[in-house]
Length: 197
Image (cartoon, rainbow, N blue to C red; front, top):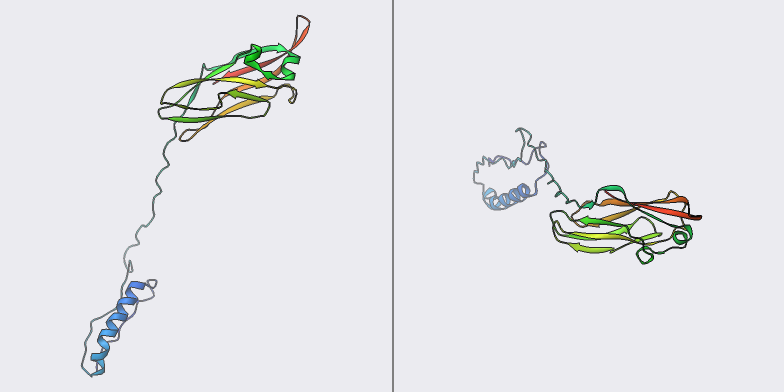
């Protein structure tokens, strides 16, 4: 009985499950015929080479670039835009500045897509109002310095308001600085400088 041996995969390729399965099926089909003594001449290599002997293929998978983020802005662009000067005791004791007659406002403007935003102060010693909202593309809204308590912080302390929104880069263009202003009409005064950039 003359038969060519079934040649399995060569070492140049890693094992291939599909090729192994095909070889097993062929062997099972030919086994009865080989047992009867028939001459079976098989030009069967059983070599399922995937990429062997050829030039190496470039299988690098490119990662798509992340979508670009929209940007918001503050106006007017100035530093400082507003300086609140008030008696030291007023700012040290704290309170709602608009109620006390002190107003400092920056205008937030959305970019070219819907903006569901949240305003987060950098410290617990001040707040802004409103603290969240939704803006249509290119629409704007005022954000006002609200509560302030200077007793817990040293002079020269700086604060930032971070505007966060899905699909937008963070905006930290609204800031403030708490300073000792000196004496006005015999009364010690402090100041809050508010910037919009």
